[in-house]
Amino acid sequence: MKRLLLLLTFLLISCQEGLDPTVQETSFVKGKLIVVSGRSSWPPIDSAIELRVVGFRDFPPKDLLNEIVSGNAFISDTLPRFLDTISYNLKIQNPPVEINYLVAALRYGTIFQWKVIGVYSDEMTYERVPKKIFVTKGKTIDNVNILIDFHNLPKQPFE
Image (cartoon, rainbow, N blue to C red):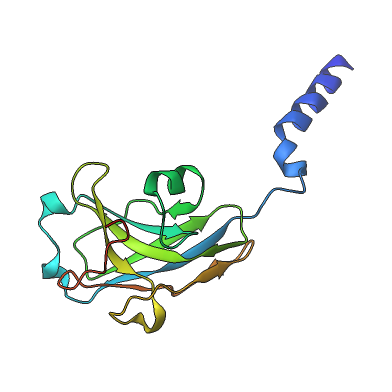
């Protein structure tokens, strides 16, 4: 009887989140980064250290570090570089959420040296007016593509 009670206690403790009705389903934003200026336009390897897609709740982002720490930013895994087309998958925790600024960001130096190289925008034009995305619970939004032109980079949000 003691073993059964111990087993039930262990199961209840370990399944706590599974029994919690407030647990949120994860959602995703998926798309491609399209390098319109071609594979040869990438900066040198020592100036293209890391590539990620980042979604911000606020636009313009007020303070990058605070946005990330407070959960107002969603960051993809590291993506491959030096290609013409790169698929990405951005995990969105605790939806529903409105993403007001979705960008491709490139680290070109230290961990604090990043630049925006593409913005998800209306009409996928060079005007780069950020397009909002509303992500609902448990859903995946596909074909959220971002143009990158290394010869014509967008305005940097922290300048």
